[in-house]
Length: 206
Image (tube, rainbow, N blue to C red; front, side, top):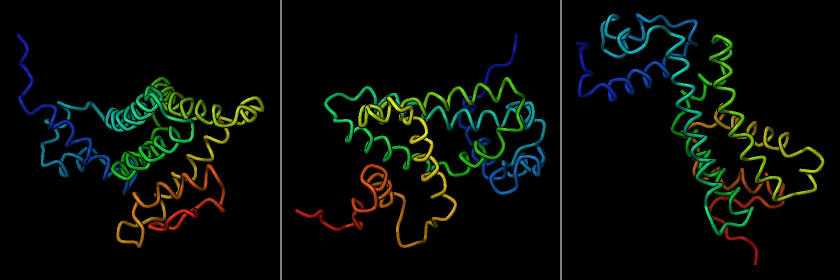
């Protein structure tokens, strides 16, 4: 009879993912050994292999877990009733920025290390990402049906993601604005252009 899982198995697994993501974000997965991951986790290498068979399994799990949370944001937002397209988009951007702010290491793994995975594993991650893109494109299409007809919903979604993704390369937690303050700025800029952006704390014009 096989040995059952320890009571803290899931907690231990999440700890491994969190610390591995931090190492991979700093050094890249190619520059990080399983010995270093085990050391960062305070585990033996044998114990680490009990949870993950190799680095590719770690990278895949980090990326898939991160994108799964983005998928959930999209699904929940699309299911909300009583929102205008503008309100739905604002809600989705806010939730996306909040998730990225709390998962910067995982997001770096997604953007920088997934491309090195085996094709079938990489394709599973890409399928998850496609659902997220499609959800945002759907809302853009309801905001501007003319742009949907011109096949611009997806390109505009990718421009939005580019704006958000790059924000995490230059923003610093100790800076004058945090991610919570930046989310409405991103939304205003995307939906209304520069003239629609309000300084944090400022009252909109009457």
